[in-house]
Amino acid sequence: MAEAAQRRQLLGAAQSVNASGVLGQNQLVFILDRQTHQAVIRVVDRSTQQVVSQIPPEYVLQLARELGGSAKVMSSVDDT
Image (cartoon, rainbow, N blue to C red; front, side, top):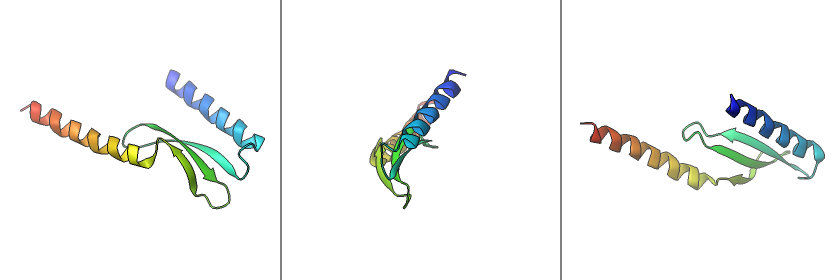
């Protein structure tokens, strides 16, 4: 329940920032990475939809995905 409330607050904050125009041609986008379940913040160009900046960077998410898969393999090996 608290997670849903936090998500609503983040979306509201992003909408406020986007509506203010402080980012100019850019907008904030919050997503949840499906594999790592990590929150990702992107600054996206409104006209081209290209990602200008992302936190955490894609290489960090990729590393987390790889480590997550390794951890699952390691835990199944330990169970045998």
